[in-house]
Image 1 (spheres, rainbow, N blue to C red):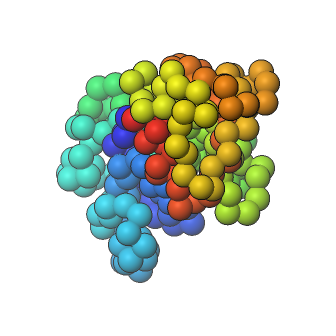
Image 2: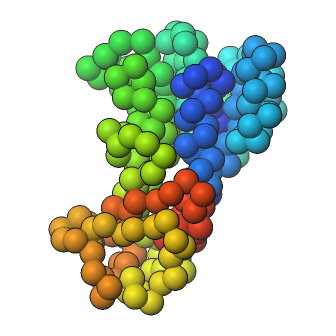
Length: 215
């Protein structure tokens, strides 16, 4: 299921996180004040981009906060990020909030937001993991262009309940683990709804793999 995600901040962390989420077929909107950053995001065609201050309620509403599943405040300012998340919870119910912070917090902000990101220690893939809330997880220590994903199979997805031998995954895909990572996959490994599988995917086929496993 595609989610609507708002990212506040289009700098390095916000831009790269938007790229990762867009490759996972999420619907991403980025709010950024700086005109050059806005142009760069628009030119990359990775997300809808709105120029403005994410702490302005009108701008958040313009970005679709009322229908969003998650807001990830990833600017360089911890205080601004917390303010955006708290404002989002006032504007809409049941929204997931993720805030970038400038140091290790040991749970300091857990009562204010659902997740914190310390990207200097983790990177954009880890930020995307917390923003996406677990249905697809990148393993952030992997380098290079190949994505190593842990994907939960959705009920009703095209691949759900079928064996690997029965599924026409695109070239550039390798399902590594069996159900919940307990064993190496084989042709007769079945993709059970609700179970998780480790998959190696080349960037150009990520969307198709996610469609098969998530619907």
